[in-house]
Length: 362
Image (cartoon, rainbow, N blue to C red):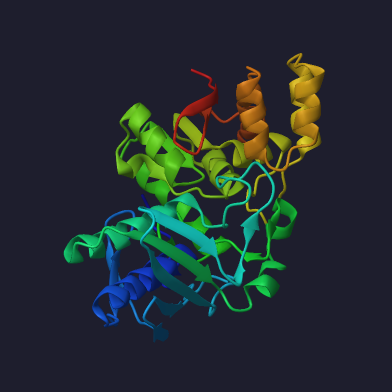
């Protein structure tokens, strides 16, 4: 895969920062000493170190904080202090997460975290659990652990995000699927896509995958056993990908992504970034009507909070909505390609990488 412009400095997600702070705090709680810097393992296996910006130790808890560095990405959380307080709960086992000041709570369905839960996404939770277990195994401490994450000023920062509309109240979300923030630069990223197409053509590649994220990329590669060199780092820039393919065609392209992103494409959006295109729930409901869905399911779709919730409703009611979304997305893609001899397939995956919708031309 072609990487984005290396002149842009990458940064760290709030999830990675929280993991580092949690590991440092838990280590101090058990040993009396804060490791600084503290090393963690990211989901893809990279080992990275973080400096501790703030620390505090009592007899019953320890707090460590890391300053969020988003690199050259214009991230609203850049420079925020991610504080994690860890305490031991002798009455239980396992790890419990809590929202501190500036970290939100989920109040609506349709997100990967249940209603009433702290807005700490699944991958950061797993990263923190693994980091704590790593320390716990070295100290033979198996008691329950309470992890509370705070971001001073997070409630105000969250007003600049989609959190309030999504029903996340009280602050920011702790996010990240890889631990790494890739700098957002339209020109640099689209340039990298173009170079990826050039390389594929030069090596006589006849089938490329272009995906919106790491989950769909892994699923497409697995499905077709495509080498990494056949994968285009498309991200949100489906328009930039297709327009270049119109000039420099490759025999086959599989566009892979989640239900939300590819719904945007089906609506006619060629830039899938959340800041420049939004899900139209009325459009999804209209598709459900075309599929002769029951009135109750259609009303639930109209009232849904997110595209993820719409997909859940469709699957529960056995409505082949994802297939129709894939078909609509393929139609838009074929329109951009015009009469270019490129066979287009669209595959929609859920968050676990399972195929839930498809449309192809071969």
